[in-house]
Structure formats: structure tokens, C-alpha cells
Image (cartoon, rainbow, N blue to C red):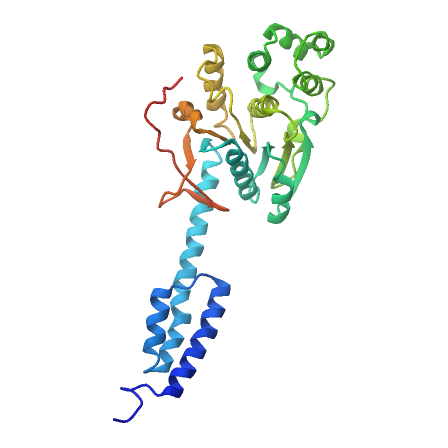
Amino acid sequence: MPRGIIIPDPKRMYNTLLGAVLIYSGLKLRSDVNLRLFIPLTLASFFFTPLLLLSFILKAPKSALSNEEGEKDITGLLEASFSSCLVICDSTKLASSVAISIAGELAKYRRVVLVDWGGEARNRLERTGVEFRVAKAGEIWYGYAGGLGPSYYMTLSDLISYFTGINASVISEVLRSGDISLLEDLKIPEPSRSLLIKVFGEEKTLLHEALPETAGVLVIDASRLPARGKDIISIMTLLQATAYERRDFLVVAPLLSPLTDPRSPSAVQDEMRWLISSLSRGGAFISSVREGERYAGEFDLALECDSCRDPLSKLDSYRLCLLQVRRGWIRP
């Protein structure tokens, strides 16, 4: 029986295999290769060599689909950025890392304030190419009351009192008068004492003044602070954002207490509900750990870092999925 269509010629098989290896290598460099289609195509090409060229054509729809998925990802995330969003993670380190990923992606379209707990933001943002500025935790002044007026000082005083144990009336007086000597005389554990003296001292740079003029990130570096100091900076940054009546920037911050504290006073719980509701104007992402699910119902959108099949967004190696609230969590 003559060789050709029915019985593949050895020379044709050799040339086809060589061509398949070269094509596979080229496609692999550009994207993943679908072996379920590629291997049968290679075998069929022993009989009819031009079939191997279909491997190029079959890649086109997949690439187009990937672009559509990418556009869908950023559209969903961008829409969510104008509301209050909770992102639940399995660890504090992951919550801090996810916050950087969210800020880096949305900074292509919006101005973003990011509280950096892990100290990784600078290096990671440099790789994305987005514009960013870095400020130390004590370089931003948090005494701007804006449209909230006296209620801003009252809420901030209660929250700082919760973290430090200082009488709320003393903190309120410091905020109103700017007399930080009232704090210097109190026995406040370090480094919380030094931190409060810095942020409530003489008026420095306001939050909106430190932001990039257009799209980009203002990184507030809290990486050298202990856990309580990180929470203080996050809560003050979130609250400060609510003082702007027409806020045009997004806030992204990790936060543990008081979200994760079931023993927080009822007044603090009420203020957290009010804060979360107020963050809907302009948008905010708060990343926390599992215990933070207690407040999930207060947010416009609750997400988690998971491996769901249909995520709202894919960021770096993270998938942001709709939160499946665990049984047993009691809302505050």
C-alpha cells in the first residue's frame, strides 16, 4: 500500500513533529497551550500537514476571551470602589497584601489612599508603574473636621479612647485646642503616645494635599508601628476621609479592632456602623480577618479571598469572591 494519506510517510512525521515542537514553544511563551487540542492536531497532521496551522487559529478566541475577562474584572472592581467594601482574608498578612493589590489596580483610574501595614507597597507599586507618594504615619494631620464639624472630634475621641484608654474628653480637648501638652502629661504606653502627639500636634499636611494630583496612590506607611498603632492609623485615615463632603478619592486600609473585637463597647459599635455607612460616599475597601465578618451586613459589598469559580475580580494571585458568611458569627 502506497505511503501518503493512509500511511504517514516517516519524513512527513519527522517534519510534523519538529514543526509541532517549534509551534508549541512559541505559543507557550505567549500564553498557556491547550494540550487537549494541540496533541490531537499534531497526530492528525501526520496525515495532512496543514492541519497543524490550526493551532494558531485556535489560540485567537482564547486570547480574546482573556481580554474580555480582564475588562470584566476591572469593571466590577471599579464599580465597587464607589461603595463601602469589606474584604475578608485568612490572615493579617494576607489582608495587608490584598489591600496593596486593590490599591495598585484601582490607582490606574482613581486617586487612592492606602494604609500600608507590611511595608511592601513601595516595591510592589513601582512594578505596576502607577504614580505614588509615600508618607510616614506621623506626617499626615488628622485634625481636619470638614463638613462633620464637632461630631468628627467626638467620634475620633471615642475611638482613640477605645484604643488607648485615655478619657475621651481629654482627647476631644486636644483636638479642639491643639494643646498637645495635655497628652504629654498622661501615662500613655509607647509608641501610641508619640504617635498621637505627632498626628495631633501642629497642623501639617492634610490628607487631600498629600494625594497625587490625578490617578495614583498616597501610601501611608504604618509598617513600623505595633499592631495597635496600625489599627489607630487605619481607623483615623478612614474617619478622616468621611470629613470630606465631596470626596474624590478611595481609601484602602487593613483593619482588625474594633471590627474583630466582640467585647467592644456598644458606643464604639454604633460609631463603626456609622463610619462604614459614611464611607459609601467616595468608596472604601477595608480588609480584615474572619472575625470581621460580624460587620459584613453593614457594608455595601462583602468579599473574601477565595477560590470561587466566578470571582468579582482577579488581582495578582488573589480571587475576590462574594463572601459566604459562616454560621456562628453574631452581628454586633
